[in-house]
Image 1 (cartoon, rainbow, N blue to C red):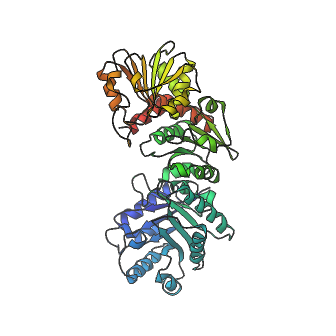
Image 2 (cartoon, rainbow, N blue to C red):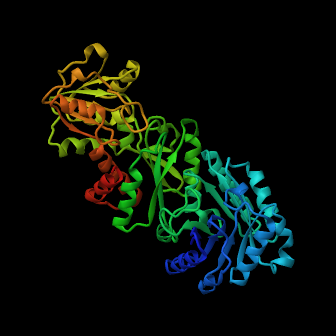
Image 3 (spheres, one colour):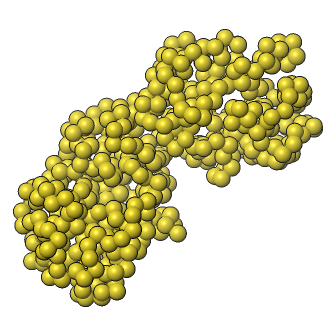
Length: 487
């Protein structure tokens, strides 16, 4: 079970002591008071004597990412007063001269010897060297490193495994969005505890979870997420985390911004950190299948993977997008049978559309910027033909945009000329951020009925959630979370 340390950021000693007491009531195992983040150092620390769990006093210097730029004598005075107020541990930075004065002037106080690197993560041997040097100071060693790639996550895990052989306590933290995984899985790494914020919005470091969330995940957890580039726009965390709360499963859904060249490393990360699975989005849906141990029939049928399940270390690819496309048509009351459909794009999402429309009896034309890719897609499905720009017309009953054009983080613009749109068509944009893209606005002006990617997103998410947990969340819960996240 993960021990939880609440890192407290308050402008006064009284406010920090109150926050510490609230942390006790919220189930924290220990608290850290960030004195360096106060506008001025307090003199009276007596309020902390009432806090009955272990307390860490921290006065982080600016060179290590903190807010303190005073003299060593000022730091020493604060720490001496903190000890008299009942603080059990002090955070002292590796290389600080105060470390050498601890025995005499700080009453041999318990200490965390910390090192922060805001540029990146060093090699495994360098991480080990930092931990060993810090441990030699008769202190609990702590290393915090910015995670820039999946290789950095693997380095953290390997260093943790090797240092654990010393049977000494330690803390290793990955900072940044990718680094959140190290905070959630601190016990799997063997860390003595993990740092959290008192509440959402009061974080002392990027990537910190809040106390309430971490308490829910402390004993056991289902860790999943979305892998893509970019993923900043994704609302999948909002809908899946709402689903975890609804069904009562202790779990969390994270974002993993992973470049194409790092995808294979992420497969190793998923197993190393005990993840249950992940969703796959642009640009990985088609290529990820080659990196998995096997494909479920749904992924074989489509030729693309949007969901990966980790079963006893084996990575299994699934596709729940086809069901999402089908439900979009059903909920809008559109039967594709016998209709002509224009599909723009030839990526993973477009393949899911082609699989559904073809099976439903539609005649599908695929238009893609690179015609060779459209031709490759069409060879996998019946009633499917690749076309060039000269074949674009108003003859289509159904028009679907399966490209990212118009999505948040991608260029604006229309994937096809607006003179292809007309009254009576059913026009779908698989994008859901923003809810109304320039393409949908053009379709509405032309008199077409429209749908964005929200229905597809929620229904494919329900399918993924069922694979990972065996539980079925409600459409209403996920849809409400999506609407809230898109505000």
